[in-house]
Length: 303
Ligand SMILES: [Zn+2]
Ligand SMILES: [Zn+2]
Image 1 (tube, rainbow, N blue to C red):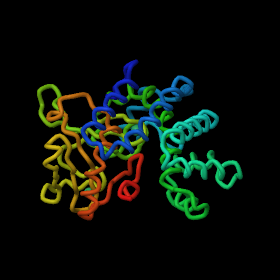
Image 2 (tube, rainbow, N blue to C red):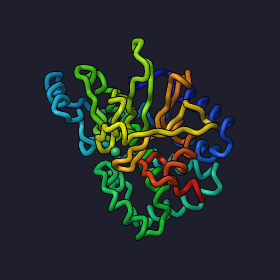
Image 3 (cartoon, rainbow, N blue to C red):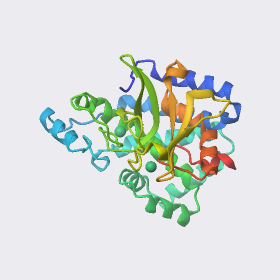
């Protein structure tokens, strides 16, 4: 499902430019994303995913039991490559974003003084150890959201490389679960599409490897609630029906969903996510929590 074309970076940049024009208030975060994506694409050719030990039969059994093909913890990062990417992203953003530059400087200083260690941060991110990540923010006084988003952005190309290698195994089995069949991560966003004449088929987009898989039309991907009386969605007049927020009254979480039937154009979920942070603000003001955070935490946007 994941789209891969040689000019993918150009497509992403173009899409960012389009959204920036439409929503100038999001320009800063979208430029931030642009710098990250450019560096990620420069490093991608250097990422060599080792032969993953998996066979078709095993993959089928694993998926049937509800296990993703790989576990996040098993992802083998090349620490040098991830560290290089981290530094390149830092430099690119420092050059362009005067507001964030001093914060990045502090992160670099902490790295030099060994107050924080990238390798450890990457590992804890893979392990989903949020407690550790919170604690470095408190201990060092560094901007936690920035550190996490830079670190996340430095390991995402590895996830994508794994997904490219493994996605062929997934088609073998229908998968309607709420976690990614490739890497087990939770979904970043939802999509509604028309598939073979069937309207409004729901897909979820992985928050780590960008793989997209089918999901039940009426169900909460975070708690499994499928009682339609406790599921609702809203959209804003400004955005029309193309972007909506699906909320669950059971667990009080939400996920943003793009209706591709309305949008009628090629979308890039991570860009659409950053371009619709205003919807996060509305949802959170209404008391809902985002199921999985994107590259940026919303509190930063509201400053
Ligand atoms: Zn995934
Ligand atoms: Zn729920």
